[in-house]
Length: 451
Image (tube, rainbow, N blue to C red; front, side):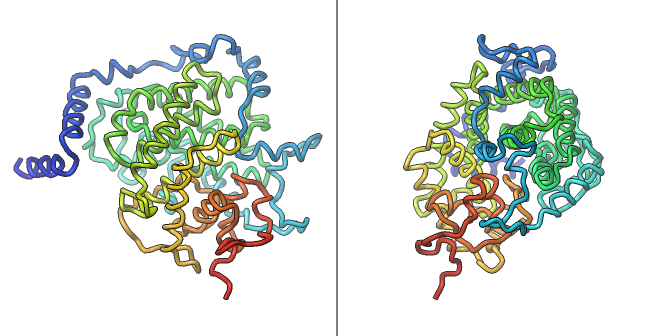
């Protein structure tokens, strides 16, 4: 009891009166069942697609699929489809070749296919480094290490924080980070098993995770990361036979319900004063941008943008360092901002100059800490194995993929010479980003600098 009092006193001194009042009030809302009233459980069939769409958008699956095809907002690799007009395969899924027509691959695509095959055989990679046998689709509520399974049909606010399990082992599968592996494997092979696995996993997740029920609805950040991955897969598998109109309609309804869940609880993320509110803001902004047909798309877009701007100013210090004092969390929020900034560019809706300066400073800060020979940095701060964009074969501790992408976005050139860390650039910018820098400025494309 005395230790609890000391802890509460320390939190009060560190975080202040407003934070303390909010946490007490939030705990009351949770215990009193007010959160259950604000965000009630319901069945997917209770709120079909038509309940989420604007009045002038058709909800019948075939009609909706035609509408999406005609009105679908742009994504990272959509602009490359024009080069393959009249051909069966889209350019994004052609083998990545060196500039000038040399068909030698810039990076090895086999690891992505190997990992995708392990996934389909029932082995899922946890925290970017350890495979666990989970089956496929996995049990979305079970910790593969301890075997503990959390209840699937309780309201998320009724699941205790001290359930005897590390909740991150439950959440990891539901982040759907494996979607990026499936996309990369599909790009290399055109094997339809990978597209089918994408849709099978989503439908299975929805079946076992009805809205606001179970641990996978507890945290808005987890929902946002799931939406990021689902959007990546939606666009990557758009031309696959597996992407049927009924599945597309279901996915949109799934995403709409999850965006609503984020929106209704952003106050909690704000008071965590960390990366949660940044990722939740990205989730809202992303849904508002890519699903303008939703009734609430406008408020999601504006709220997400406002919070992304606000938190960049609040959490990234003037020298570029990050307020959570963790290099891994620093990479986490930069991946979120780079994802958003690149999509903003594509939609001619750039973020503010102040946000861009903050991200630029943050990228430059990390360049001072990296070992350019292996991409590693000193272990500093918390590290829970989080990796927002697993789009390459590099080791989890290799920060070159992040900085190559970040430097290109903020400076228009590559920081390092070519290597497997270029694959992130390929997915977000296309093959033109892999061409040699015609006149490198400073360190661009020349790390370490030439003598």
